[in-house]
Image 1 (cartoon, helix red, strand yellow):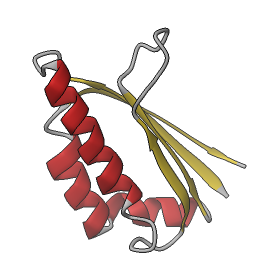
Image 2: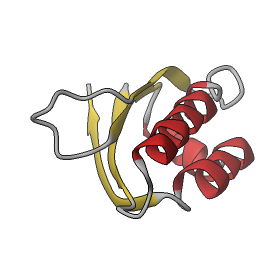
Image 3: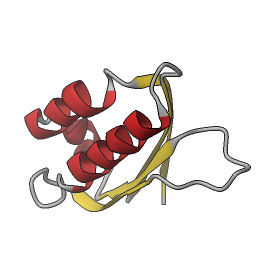
Image 4: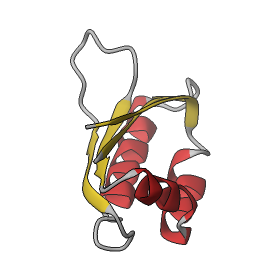
Length: 100
C-alpha cells in the first residue's frame, strides 16, 4: 500500500468564514472520491488542526499501490475536485508519498 499525504495553506486573503467554507468543500470533494476512483483504500481530510499547526488542512489517504496513486492523480473526478475546490484557494501545497 501507499500513503499520500498533502498539507495545504490557504490564501491569506480569505476571511475566516471563507476558509471554513473552503475547507468543508475540500473535505466533501476529496472524501467523496472513495468508491469513484479505483484503488483508494482510505481517504480523510482533516480541517481542524491544533493551535500549534502552521497549515490549514491535511489530506491523509491510502492507495492499493503506486499505480493506483498515479491513476488517482489523473482521474477526471479527482482533477475536477482539485481544479474547482482546491487550487483556486490554496497558497502552499506540500506532498509526501510513501510505502507502507
